[in-house]
Image (cartoon, rainbow, N blue to C red; front, side):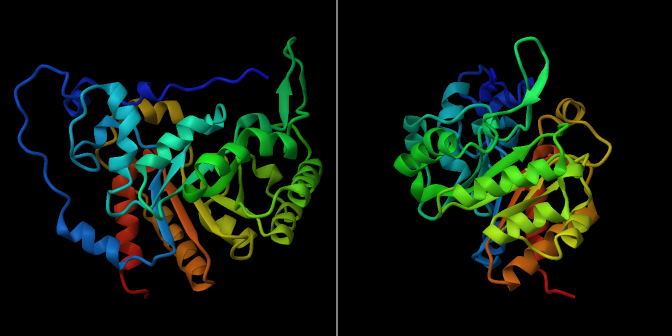
Amino acid sequence: MATRRRSYEDAGRAPEQLALFESVQRPPAPPAPSVDDRLRELAASLPPRLRLGTSSWTFPGWAGIVYQRRYPSKQAFVRESLGEYARYPLFRTVGMDRSHYAPVPEDELRHYASLLPEGFRCVTKVWSELTTPIVRDETGTPRLNERLFDVALFEQAVLAPSRAAFAAHQGPFVFQVPPSRVGARAFSDALARFLERAPAGPTYAFELRDRRLFTRRYVEVLRAHGAAHVFNWWEQMPSLGEQLEHTRGLVGPLVVRLLIPPGRRYAELKDAWAPFDRVVMPNAEMRRDVVRASRLALGADADAWIIANNKAEGSSPLTLRAIAELVAAPAR
């Protein structure tokens, strides 16, 4: 199946965002504000096993929120900004989304690793060739994907480059499963076969975009192999609270991805909420569910990985700051 690799240089093209780049001719900007002391204090108060981060990082609209330095060009920003991102006080992880479209080459992983501080770990999407149950052949006819959960291909294309160049910064591998016409039992059986043969060591996490696949059998397979369900806030999935109830607590380490409000569409919010420098639609229920799940995980001495997308509320760094404030507040 042909894959499309999204260009991260397309992120945030609104004219007002270009102040982040020195090549734009305009009057000198005033000095960027430093990160406030309250933010540092908040970050220091969070549990060490809680990792907050955003879904990707190359958004010029975060200038003054996450990014304080100026970059000579968009290309330099795309190549180097991860280093500044990783030193933002609240962030101890990031979602590496580009790997969904094609495996990240070993030399690029090595470059990313050179930018990251010790202890910083990434949540990496697995190549969609390995996670899509149904594909179309050259005539457009749907068929079962023979590469779904292919252990050998995963080891060769995803795991080997990570171990060679990125091991110190590798967090969970997220298998994003799109809606499809595959049967729920067949899917769970394929998942079980993968987990029985997959190399030990990595955290395997599975994000369903199809509620039909979110069955008791699916949960049992994950629990039997110590794998994680990704609690995703997504338009076509049950709420985070319902997912917690369905799994009867937690399955594996906690991995949460806050994506799109119910009833909305990705493209709609991408256009309406750019440049992602403010919270447009805060959601108190979502935030409470994230805090509840985090406290369950931390109380069980498990790692908690919380990834937020700009389309969740309008600005993922500001969403995560609000969640951090709730986590740090005394439980009631």
